[in-house]
Length: 101
Image (cartoon, rainbow, N blue to C red; front, side, top):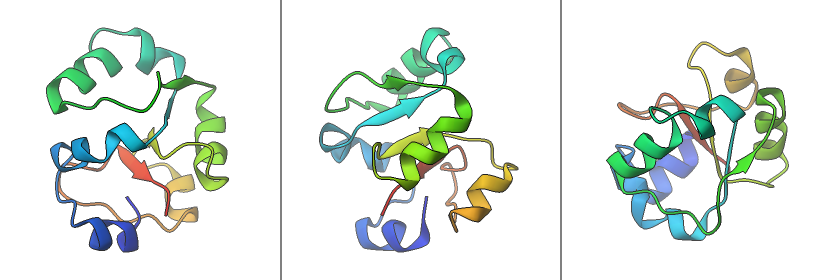
């Protein structure tokens, strides 16, 4: 998550984002959306209910969608260089989640 957004919303865990999720649109890769241990388990575990069904897209497009404000949340890899390029910080428990400003 970008540091400024983290500070503004005071989000410290993925669960903290559940109250904002109904206002957000998520974008995830096909594997994450379709696997039981991906989005279905993730959303159930953290109580995430988004404004609409997650947009399924190629992984490389998730970062572009986030940067262009087409989605509010994506799943990314903590070691992915595109996260650094977006100047995203991370909080404990939020390494795989990135939000747009």
